[in-house]
Image (cartoon, rainbow, N blue to C red; front, side, top):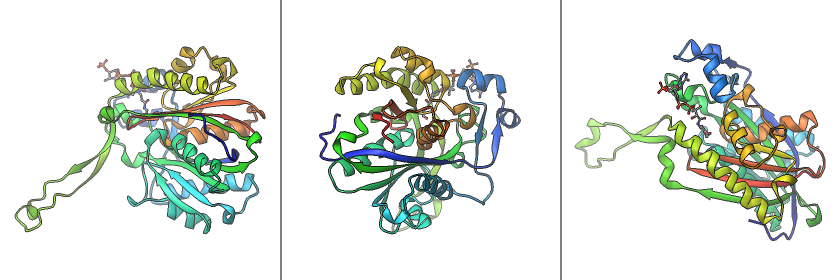
Length: 338
Ligand code: UT7
């Protein structure tokens, strides 16, 4: 959708954080029947960062990423009006954004979680943009953070090789409409395929409660399950379509794209999408060899690293696409303005 803009919105600064513990493919091959060669060839992943022990949580990573973004934008946490935390691995099922608000001292901010798995950062960025472009808020902190290591079945070689933990943050700020940097978006959902990738709630046998007056069945969430082949096919067919629809709406073409920043799920997916769009792979932003699939964190983490490297220039067009569980997918086209 091409927003009707009363007020411009642009990303002022980004920040990111990953755990210190680095897990190599070699280490994983000591746990399950796999090899460095298989993982690198099929995914492009060489290592990932994982929270180990009790020392840090999702909130710690999110707070470090947020403070780095705030520092870069020379902004005080008290200036933040809204915090959107995109995560599927919260500390609390009621939401973790309020804990993040407290941790960084952003006491003037409203804070809520947004759950859309690996598309979470795209959905959160688009949501934040609406609040700015319609004039409701001026400064918004958008964070994508996940610790899927907590929900990974470490005996399942088809999934445990893929995921890593991390957080990425962006400060979105109101600006004059002629400086608007969030140009348009395209969002989609196909709930009929939700089973392809999920962390399902499972009921547990509760003999004790069975004959009680209140036979409520309770359960818990278990591990990530994924039909990798189906999710792969979905990504390489739907993501290029989403990008083309979004570019078309903005009267842009693939040739206008300076950078392609896709959810960091699999190097083969990144190249297949670029190929289908006839975009040179030299325009792909990729860091998944170091971090694996960090779910909602992957896009802001890669954006932050690209900005730190200085490869993104003012007025560059960046096409950002997320895809994953739901199934959800979405594209947001931005023009770098800072
Ligand atoms: O973040 C949300 C989005 N997620 C994604 O986009 C993930 C999309 N899917 C993928 O990236 C790929 O499907 C995977 C990387 C998960 C799997 O790659 P693949 O090329 O689709 O492999 P496969 O599942 O078709 O398995 C091929 C073979 C099988 O053996 P057989 O049946 O051919 O004998 C698997 O059992 O590879 C075997 N295999 C492994 N072998 C060594 C599966 N996992 C492993 C492993 N190590 N870790």
